[in-house]
Length: 338
Image (cartoon, rainbow, N blue to C red):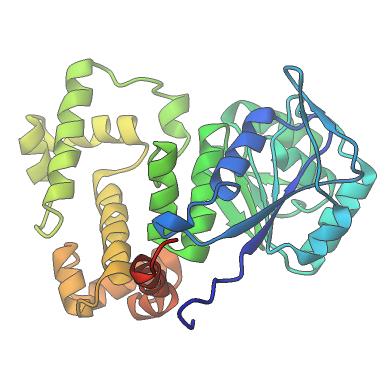
């Protein structure tokens, strides 16, 4: 990109109709509707799209005024469908047809929480995997039996369609979509602005089965162990070694860790190492073996294997795709401000 030339904003469509949740509308707007280009986040063009230009009523006396009709979906790079206050709310037929046409054009579509019901009404989840709030899984199965409902994921992807679990998982999905399209640094900058984690590991099981840790002492101990591991990522870690630091047996440590985070200690470590490697690949010119060493993978080969498994790319290709974020930020920083 030539210095001084602003990047073309990604076009995001928020699909609105009576019954969509105000919270999800706010999440979508907060992620893609705020200008954070001064913090290295690429520009976004968020449009509120509806069947007609009339204000869309939301719960609590709120309303949303569309600024585009459904025809704008042909221009969208991503379509996001909010969840529903009443999960069986029928979407207008023009909305369902527009979503079908968008999927046929291979436009990515994401649904937050009960928005999965809207996609299911459109037939877009037939014979596909989907997730929704854990308390709605039986309802989704009953009313849409052709959907393969996954009970415990925070969000998942199937055939260019994304679905997420309830409320906070919608934030997780939105940040993940930013991260996969624009890089970890852009997602992290948005997350910092929202005062939320750039990503969470684990599944809904941590909320279904164990809403709170067993004791405050265990929660504090495990948090301290995770903080230690994050500041010593370059070192090799084992479950047994982390358990000693927590003052627990390996079996007890693994059980409490999964109850608190929804994932195993080793999976959590891999996720943290991948995230740290993404940041180094975006922000530095360190050789790949050094990135692998600093993030605890030990070797470039091991790091490459984990990138292939978890990100469907290689560290080298990831750097080529996303290091322009740093380059552009340096250009913007050097450019004199009016």
